[in-house]
Length: 335
Image 1: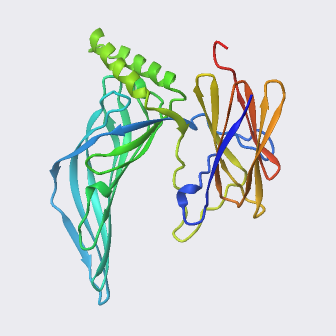
Image 2: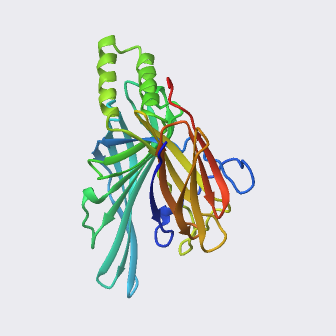
Image 3: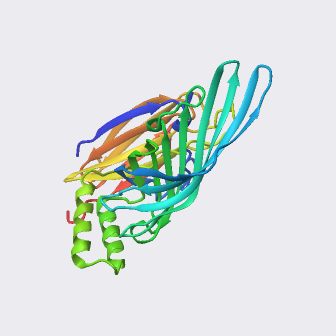
């Protein structure tokens, strides 16, 4: 077997999203196992959000001689449409958009955010229950471009195809949100089986309708890929850098394409020496070892890498000469 490794490094300094502390049960001293939901199916999506009604805006200003601050709140009723894997989802919700402004003399900075919890998006293969947060940058004294907004979608399940499925996405655009949605399916086959199961549970559908929706799902799945859930921003008090994890953390996902199998890895360097070597060792079925050095990194750094070859094989991840994780990749079914 031949192995190929791609690698990239995101530094902790100045980038909060670079630090993903995902811990599981300790397997042995110095090691952490990745949670079972680390793998995700990355799906391109493009939806619509329509404001159907708006409440009266309420503004409160606190003036001072040099610096003034204030806030404006306004209720918005929304219709949300978001096709996922060829399956249309629709729902309604209300949220309060709240804008905070700080003005120094004639210069102003403003941020606006609205949040809706427990939004139910209904679909023919099941319902997804999510939270929706809209972050809208505001320029100057109130100008804004909806295309600059970010729509954060988070969910932990629902019914039918979404039963027990984690959902995560940060989509661009307030009215036409688009981007990548990450779903807690380990493979495209698992997603298709969940969709088929969800459609079968919907007794209102006819067999031709089920067949048509399943064909749409198969077509949409050609654009999906197995990946890792993006790391969530760590929480830390303002002005403080989040601490690195006490132990190295490793998350992984397995991609299969024909005879080739790829293991995608995200490694977070733990507390300890300022320079810690990160290394992969790939062990073939016949015991042959292939070592790949990923360089030395500081505590808190996130190292992304991948190892590919013909399964079965084992990937050993070492951080500062300590094995952080062992990943066994079985042969493909039917081999």
